[in-house]
Length: 252
Image (cartoon, rainbow, N blue to C red):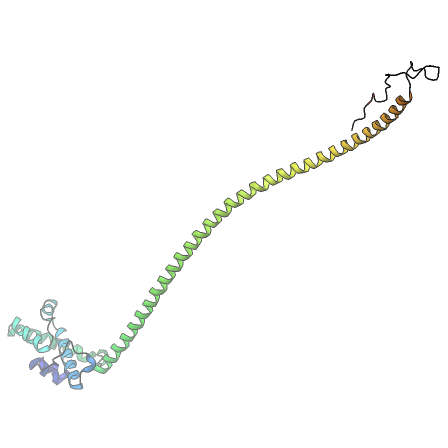
């Protein structure tokens, strides 16, 4: 196994066996503050852990998954397994050497820490952009929801106004019907007035004729004298004899 690991990177074996010191602020320290030496140490540790992980079963992986350094993983494996078991792990790694060495040049992709850092920063920028878009969409959704509520309120208001206008329209229609009836009655009344006027005019003409005839009759009656009036025959004028001059009284 040592030959296999040394063939990949000699410093990896030193990292596994001797456990070179990692940066003290390995977890809490921001990555951008690491110096080049610290970055290189972290890279070697991660690569060594990856090689060991590839040779472990799921049960073995569960036992060492919380370890931070490759040396810590190796020590736990030595404690958990006896030397024979450790050799079994070594043989498993050696069995992988042939396949790995053949495909390593084609399939293995090595990234420097700076490349990983740049990729992380790009992903973080994209994440912030997505969060910003999501926030904008939420604000737009809230604004749209408020607009919908306002439109519903206005629609309800307009519906109430329509109902009110319908009531007023019904009232005015009744008023129009009343006015139509009143207008019809007025027309009928005018026609009746015209008829009455014609009748009055006819009566006036008849009365005028009657008055004229009455005047003539009065004149005739005024000219007559009583049969007992013998004036001119040697008799004195009769007294207390009323003629029929005023017998017919003219109506005023």
